Amino acid sequence: MSKITEQLTFQNGRRILATPSQLARNSLFYLQEIGMQSCEPGFVSSRDNLDSFLIMLVMSGDGTVIYNGSTYNLKPGCIAWIDCMNGYSYKSSSDRPLLIAWIHCGCVTMRNLFSFFLQKQDSILIHVKEMKPFIDLFCDIENIISEKKANYEYHISLKLHTFVNMMTTFSQETDGVSNAVSTIAEKGALIKEYIEQHFSEKITLDALSAEFCVSKYYMLRSFRNQYGMTIIQYLSAYRIQYAKKLLRFSNMQIDAICKACGIEDVSYFNRLFRSYEGMTAGQFRKKWRK
Image 1 (tube, helix red, strand yellow):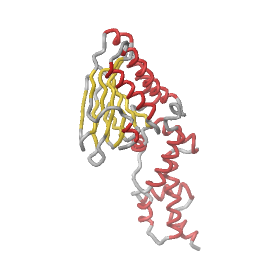
Image 2 (spheres, one colour; image 1 turned 90 degrees about the vertical axis):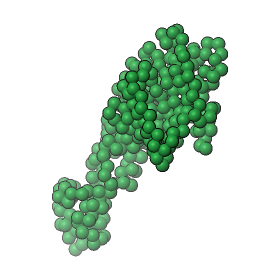
Image 3 (cartoon, one colour; image 1 turned 45 degrees about the horizontal axis):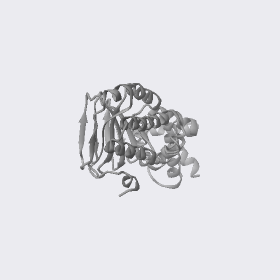
Image 4 (tube, rainbow, N blue to C red; image 1 turned 90 degrees about the horizontal axis):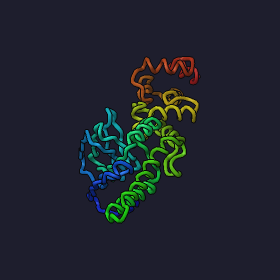
């Protein structure tokens, strides 16, 4: 069992329901449900038209969540925030089933906070390097609702407010939440490394956005600021660089080199190569083999 999972104070499968008072609904952040679940392989759950907001922490495993027509990859360290009125579904992978912890909650201003989050983040997901600050809050909320001491709804409200504030702070700042959230620069480096390792495969911006749990808009902007070129430009340049090595130091046919670089269309490969080198791939080979 991972250290993250060990920090949770209740057993897998436990679910605690809460019925907030009218005072809490009118004036506080209120809890509706808190729980943890280990999903069976291929497990699917769908909900819609619920007057609730779901915060879901992915502790281990892999899966996907569909929300407003977009599909997001779930991985350890992902935290999803969802408006359940719009409907959503999530699915566990078959080989790495999800272990998730969740909070259903609300407040009179929650929809505005959620909209603010999406405007800054343009995604329902954040991806954190260190889950402990979020797990600590999660466990505190579970303990408070279990004990139900005096003024427990007020104390839950404080914890939920802190949790939501951490989520919205991440959507505004590039240096993360108290150094717990991976920085945009770090994600840029990871995206660059991913391209260098998978350049021979089909790579799309939507797939990269989902892979690294970051909005496409921020991914594109931050990568260009960081490396002085777009992601597509970097991918193309890396493929051409690899093609040049094969042209000079191998006897592979040009169409085979094209495919080895992740490009299926030889005509497009030649146009791209000419745009970088000012000559065709065949001319480049002849020039450098004299």
